[in-house]
Image (cartoon, rainbow, N blue to C red; front, side, top):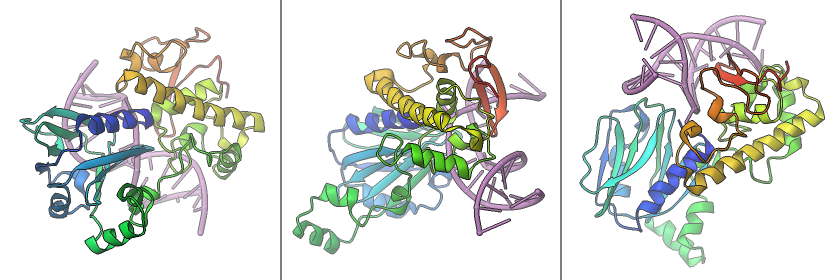
Length: 297
DNA sequence: AGACATGTTGCTCA
DNA sequence: ATGAGCAACATGTC
């Protein structure tokens, strides 16, 4: 389900639910797919008895930092969700991880199980003490220090950050010259956080046909693509930030009619700018929606 | 019943 | 070696 802004929404939902209170109990669905590769016993040791102190989101992933230095990483896959429930919550069939504090339950649920839980154990006490003596705060050490796990540091630099330049986009388009634009926008190594609906939204705003080969763009078109990537990310984060809640925004009154999004799946949906009937086809392996009036092959 | 779903990965083939 | 396309993963919903 979740792309960039929804991931941020879910991160905040967990983060704001609890003042830093101790995790008293943890439930892990050990055999389920999202936990693959993680040692449930080590996870349990690190998390139970510690507090959730901070968190961050990048692309489609979240990292939660616990006192003591453990990292919990969550990817929501196609159908994942984070919820907050009462402390006496009884986990359901698709709940893979539940953290209980004295007042709340933090629930990670994912019916299709394409999501993923990742984990890094706290550093040894001696290392943590040395860092403190060097004058780093614990939070800084965790965020920027040498022990940031590889699954976090390897995430591509954000679209709204300084490294996402027109030149970087143009170079990437050249390298993927024969792939359709739609497929290229879904590549997380250059467009981290973009998913199916955001890709369609970006191409619609940039007036580029999703089947255009990436290598065929003129410089002005590459620049439009770059600009709309940033714009759609900014707007999506703003909508989520203003209590927009998770999408689908076809049910979200805050999404204005100047978006393709609310019309994407509508039967007989029409382009909100031109009024023509929207078209749909599988491009880059995913259902794609575009406006034939704005987006020419 | 059958098609389809906001994602990623690992395989095959060029 | 590099890149493009596609099946597979697992379950729910229309």
